[in-house]
Length: 258
View 1: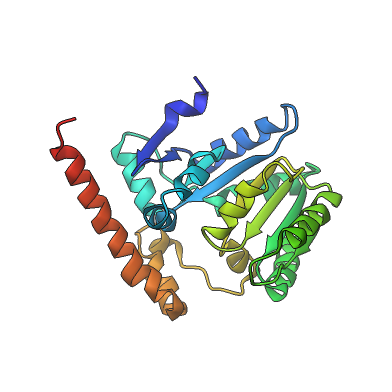
View 2 (view 1 turned 120 degrees about the vertical axis):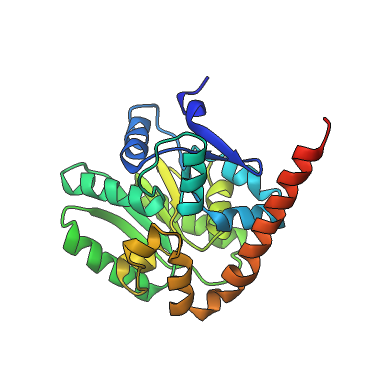
């Protein structure tokens, strides 16, 4: 049995690893001691489960990830109910900060940032190098905001691989970024790939980040909604729909006689 199997809990058939940032970092570091291959990380949050309900095939993308991080307080709370000690949030942002700190201490990791806008990437580079002057940014690229042809996608993969990255951080939005990593997992020559979504925006300071008091009380969604009303469909329609469906499926499972 894989040692990670001991710290898995499931929600609606989707696995989540009950991890804290330091432990997640150590697991990632252990991958560099093994024969080189590509590993994927899912920063699993409520939006992932919404997408699983809308498209059940998406669960395979998350469940096939080498790490499924508990991103967001609903998952942290559920993990605590299952008996796991999870005092801190542990999404992709927390893991990235751990890795960036190691890079700044002299670990020669090479980081590639794929997705988002040219403006965000430019600001992201500036902010990261201000905080982590020894961070090695192998490259950055903002692809077109449309469906890519296979030829275009392969050119992007070749462009990434030429920079010899160890980490490929992707900001295309969920579920697109997770699907992109999954579909290209056999083409990318890096060791680690993770979907970062809005983390690029937060780290670049192009988008304000909720204070910790809101992030840990479960009201980060409200802060983000106030600052970006375009998220109203997600937070006011899709998320309540997900929780109702989850209650329905749990109730049906309890009432069945299998």
